[in-house]
Image 1 (tube, rainbow, N blue to C red):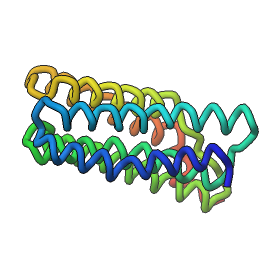
Image 2 (tube, helix red, strand yellow; image 1 turned 45 degrees about the vertical axis):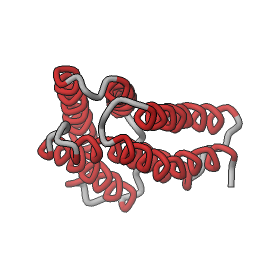
Image 3 (tube, rainbow, N blue to C red; image 1 turned 60 degrees about the vertical axis):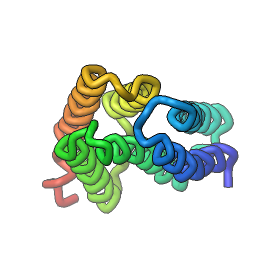
Length: 178
């Protein structure tokens, strides 16, 4: 297993720790929320670090290609689920995020079955980065309702845009029988 993949696994291992701290915070500003934010930031930074290591040291692997985006999705969705539980992130918004993730994953599976690889696009990277940043800001100021609304709309906008872009650019994978 490569160093890059080990760092990605570390991000996955941070998720239950993050969830426990978020749960203990009760959605309120204070020590537990700050600990949640610290774990989330560290976990988010591993996304950048593992990618840099994989590219610089030629450690790109099929396992890493599978696990890295999955780790990102699990981390960000864990935060959204907690905000949803507290009534701050609407369930319909969470459903849009989940639908996009399942749809893009399905598209990638169809493409792989046809011998094609769909690389992560810039809009997907922007979606992930803006979602992670937005969730960090929200954890820093969990009681600011307007801020939460703005962050929700940023997440939804980047999620829908990147999802549509993946399908527009790769539509032929669904219909081409080759």
